[in-house]
Image (cartoon, rainbow, N blue to C red; front, top):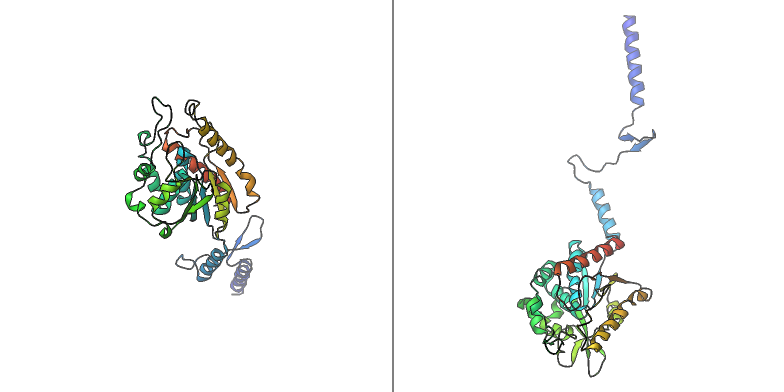
Length: 318
């Protein structure tokens, strides 16, 4: 009997010793220290109420990103803006305001009205070289035409009837008068009328009355955008590297060749303005494979825009 009691006492002692060494609701790390096991979910595998409130608080503290885009001039090179917009759309980055210069206005106005970069890209795929003015056989000059035919070819009629003031994405564009020379801003009226004034530039299109795209309103656009409550102002420059046109294109219109080269030089100084405007980020798009006035691959231009946008998003940590 005494032997049984002694055996029972030994078993009880060993059991108590083992229990005292246990650490409830802990996990032992590699160094041998006790690491508290976080209680992430309830018994049904769902987040606890405390966790949900904590997540909401963190989300409320995170600054909301709001972008203003300046889609720079570049004739056919500016078609790369469609890929840039598509990359931002896919990353769900909100665009609050767009300023479009020359063909940048065509792409920006279309996006602001449709709210879909994919739709913009789809319609641009239909654009062919025979939809654009060409060099005359005898004159060797571009036969400039009205821009309305291009606008109607690219943008559906239902969107062209929309009032710019009523668009979900705020849109405006700079124009200049050959008579006064000052920059004016167009941000109201039907989209068709607004683009009819903002897109035309030489050598493709005739001015709309006395008005045409203000190609050189680069810093003016930055100043105009700076008035908005935005976290970032992005200037997208499609006039990056590469030759703008062939020697033959402007053999009889050398003044136009000089104009576009001056514009390219001005876009190359944009980065110097980043220290002047603290919210400004200049993004150069590599469109070296695309000629300025000769129709190329819309897909390649879109890809160039997407690559530039991807780098921007990486830099912003988005």
